[in-house]
Length: 560
Image 1 (cartoon, rainbow, N blue to C red):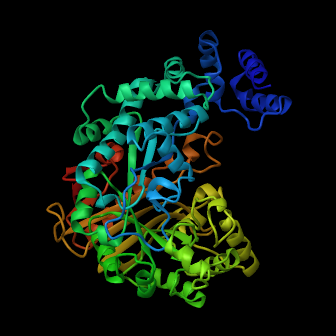
Image 2: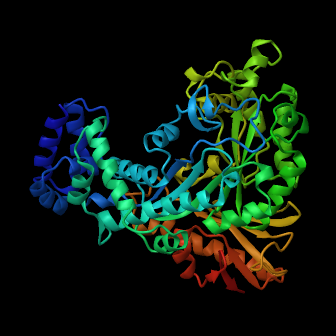
Image 3: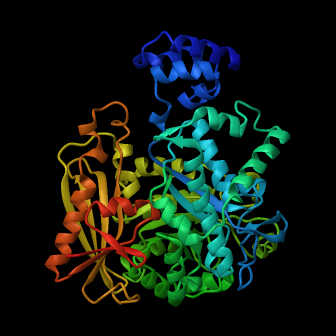
């Protein structure tokens, strides 16, 4: 049925106007009982070279290739220097096999890493192939390094791993893009498409070709970073996972050299007792110290916070989340909430079997999170409310993977409105009217923060924001007493606008990014600052050059 669909849609496209293309795909998908409507790219990949020439006159396959893609890559299995937390699955020679620390091998990113021998180049290259085949955006990449405490690994390994990831983006760009368009005949030939993704011979052949491409030139971190600044596929953000005791100044400086812009920091609690009871290997003092250092280096912080930890009563959970944003010593920029899961092979599993630990339930977690949403400030983004681990590998704890849906239902029932970034961003709210630039000023980690927004105040819709900080200390030579730092600039695209509204009505074409930057510079000058530093993803440096910024060590800088 699938082949018949492609044959008919290709024949029909050559006769139809491009305006009718979407309707045509929808109609034929229903006719042939397709499980989903194939993307333009999928149709192009199932076309002959002769058909391809004709189809490109009708509709451009690259229209879907503009936007930000998240690529998660896993480091090789390695133990934590302090040992293991009592709840931590995975790690070398674990009950789940030889998998990265704190993972089970069943998560999508882990399975992809295993298939690619934990090779960063292979992982990134394969993921880019998937995005292209699906017709999804991937010209801007948010790269996330997972697999445990990355800064604790050998420095040479860190450099090589990140350089490999950059090189994969650079080589994919050079190999398959010509004049801003993907070279589909070359792409099809290289990846042997259309083909069976489960075919071992095809998988082996493609992997060999990718590794051959990887080995063409010597891989140097600085060289690949420089290449990526102007590559078609740019790394606009790099995230590293770590623990507070591995997020001090020396670690932060190493992250900056790699091109890191965000840190996923496993703080897990604002209480001391659960950290000791679970053998976390760090204290609350370490958490506070690391947060201040990372912010003063200009890095964004995505805090990991666990519910249901031993030593925390259920009635203290909401208070803990409230303290996370009311206490100036914490105040992370983003938040991932992880209700504790009990898994075999961990000391916590044995405690649970002996009746020494009572796991948190789905209902309890949903209740706690829904209540905490009353207190989430407008400058935090709640990224996740549970882990991406299938329930069949867990023994106790929450038993639903759609916890966010349960939280939302409770919010509606109790009339709780969440003001976090995720709940207000324009892509989810679709419509906006009069947009204003607003400023929320607050103290955090002994410094001063300004959360500058482009928002529709009346409808509570967020179109973009900028995080401006006056650091509490000068930790690098680039940072002076009179330096201000932009830790994040983000402008959203409206889901309503893409492909449907004219360019002047699309959020990203209204100049909000520039307006937010100008407001940040204005605030800095009003407070006597004479220099602005921006922490920029390697692939975003060209954007800041257009705004008058230039290289200043690991940052982009500008005299005010």
